[in-house]
Length: 275
Ligand SMILES: [Fe+2]
Ligand SMILES: [Fe+2]
Image (tube, rainbow, N blue to C red; front, side, top):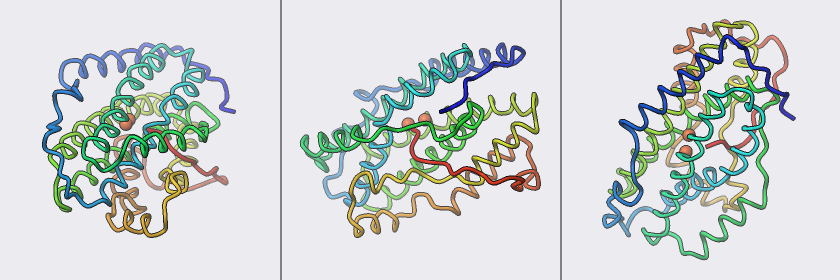
């Protein structure tokens, strides 16, 4: 169980400001339409099927949305900035899931029956919060969003290298920009906590970031070894990517030195998905 959240009164106004800035910027610059902004007529039927396997895996992660929102909202309920953020976040994540599923169908890479099977296998398992404190969840969300943005960016690059698909590439670019915006909101919230309670926040950074793993969704999808190997060959995200493109940039943004990240106590392991 994730411990109940006790808001810090002095942080509530800054959280709300962050949310309004996030929302206003999204309304002004970032809104996009699945129907109008993706060139659906330009799906490539010859695209390497390994790319579609990865899209299906990401789609499965995004499909956990009802668990993500229903479990995090009660934890952050006392904070207006954080609850309103999650309401908007849920809308954006739902769009990601719809867009990826639309591409799998419209490209002919998956049938309606296969998509129904995917949804069934996702909902057969329940996702639970991987951290036992709201601050641990904030660190987890920060890292997960940046890792997701990097993964979508790399998938777009691999797509271009493996035959290209203008519809998928456009869609992945739009989704990656959203993930980057989510990351930006969470990292700024973390910055506020760090300024308020450096030692307590550092403890959560160590616990979560030193043990972070990307979602183990291959098992969930019942993928064959051969298929998992094909996906790995694409090098979308690995430990080295995590260190260089997630771990170090998060620390740099927060002004945390690597020496402050040395573990002083046994840490808990991070677990599966969050979009
Ligand atoms: Fe997403
Ligand atoms: Fe996201």
